[in-house]
Length: 394
Image (cartoon, rainbow, N blue to C red; front, side, top):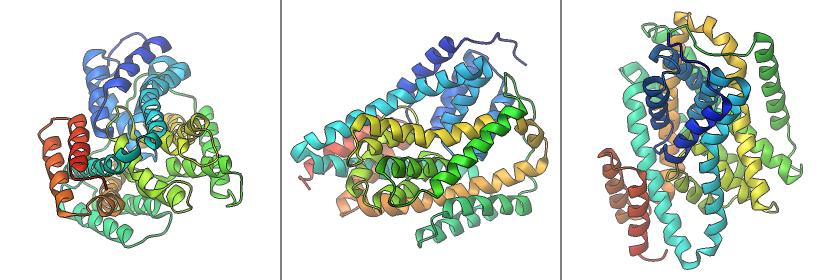
């Protein structure tokens, strides 16, 4: 096990700020950046310990890459390091999304093609991400069938808690059908909270979730918005792509955010570095009756808080759980269910709202090929927006 001395919160902040400014590509890419930065270069931990942290964050609801950053900072410099890692990795993306929300109403005639181009960005990036995740999570026909079943049920119109139910079903499926999955490594490097502190964090998470679920529809707007963002962060497994349908249900369907503006923000979130959950900054700044900056801050804090409480609370207990072979089997089923949720979100609203004509499909396919060739998200954004603009102001 590496014997690198513990870092200070300032060192943790500097390391994660570099990633927050340059880590494009979504949660899977972020985890690869972390491995290069903290396993290969800085040797804060080894591969087995890193896989142990990643497995925990994938098993919990919330933004997996941000939770992993939080856990890495926690292990290196305690609570100050955890907060430093989260702020450094999240702030650049959140500020860019806030800036986009402020600039979007002033774009005038460009708003139509820009919005449509960003929707096409979402088609390409989500499609590329779906393919990559499916290759890793669906190695056999059993898990492929589970993913298809989940996608079909969700796409046909499922209950509000369908993502949570799908994950629970995936875990049960894994326990029955994925018993050959390898157990998770049990060792973990770095500082972790005590079990008493972990229990307090888990109780705080549950109490806030109960309040969010019981929030009345006639509550003041800031409370309703905070409850919606907290529910999205607490009940969604699989990261930024999978949170899309729940955010749409909680914010678009009640009329708090316009549907086209919502998808424009989702497309822009693909083009900025850092976690895609910072779409909450864009959506919070778009809430009627709230100034943009407080709204953005409300959205970011409320959507990230549940995932951070969970990972901080679960770390003390994860070592014992990781020694159980059945935990690996359950995780294998959960990952297959996540592919189904992502596929349903890819169909509706991403594809249905963006692919309005044959030329849109051609643009999206060209952007997907660009991504598959490893050319990066910025080229996709520029190409899709330019192509939509040349196609005429819609």
